[in-house]
Image (tube, rainbow, N blue to C red; front, side, top):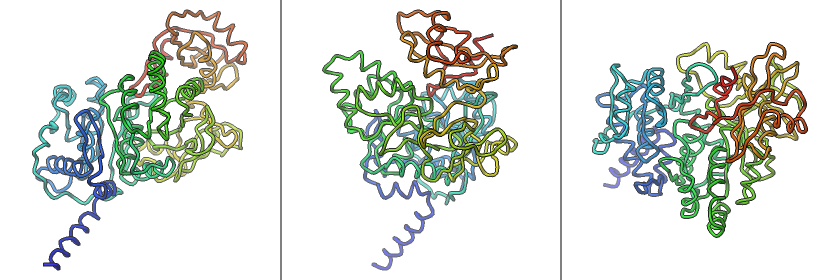
Length: 510
């Protein structure tokens, strides 16, 4: 009897050793809470069982999906995690779809990925059906997974492709950025080390789950660490503050737009409520901002409210995270710190030569976490790398050992009258104007100057502003060639992450 039990345990151990590390780690956290949603709390054991049912169902009569693309439209929920893990455990490539996107954009992602299976939340089935169109793709509702029988699952090697996230890009249709399980593991373990994740952490997720910020930095890091991920179906400032107060949250990660909206909600609250809200933030060990530039004024206001100096970092869909201010140590406003563990970063000039300290250059990145390819775009993939270094297209300078991002090489670096200026630098100055809530600076083709500095502004409630008044104010704070020549007052166009879409802003100045 003892020998039989020993053999069974050995076989079970060997079988689990062939599983992906994320799944193996989940088994060691089996009875701990993994995910908290409006539907309740779910353990790692329940996640393993649910994702196993998903994998078994989509495998059907196959033994391995062999990197078939599986697109899925599921709101932030326990089902989202079970579906994503189920796709991985079945040997497929997970292609997350954005719940906020119109049918046309969903169709582009599904067709670009050539997804053979599309999974949908029951309430989104009609939307997905419209996006799938007449193509022969298997459409599956998440309700089919609940009673699916468990079957044997394939061994999935880490070198295989795991995830395809579509980038918004600056021109053309979004490209599919493909990462392997090895890439995902490197991205996650880098942040586990840099930000000292542990099993006692509890993070609140409010970010969309079709971007790396939410998928990797929050959800997958939490589950790798054996921590708890509390998920909201959508961002709501009042609900976030309620969760801050009621839940034992230790980490929070968001984009600058979210922090701005939380500040607005805090300022509208009664004085006694404000104190409770601020105290809740002070209990957390880390608050992070990313995916868009963090205005210094916003950082300082957040620090006034809750005592946290937001940790700003730099990353991309293609690399995960590349740079980060320190968890322990000085965080310099307007800077994004130094390379995270496992990542090498250098700055190069337009000829690909490394620049001297203090000089501006394009950020290039190298490391195991860097993506493997743009889906079915070998030429685009080839052009993205230079001697093994991924060219980000972002321009930066190192000051006092810390990187400061100056903007996108193609969008945020404006060449006007022989001067090269950073749109982000001008924006940082203009945000300090008492009437401006937010702004976006772009370069617009100009016959005399090459490019003319133009700005689109969102005004504070009840305020008015003319170009002449703005220019007079700006001349006291900016070099003459940095002062905007044109201005429009508008609501800035943003994507799902709250990032301003500069291409659309440029189109406002015809």
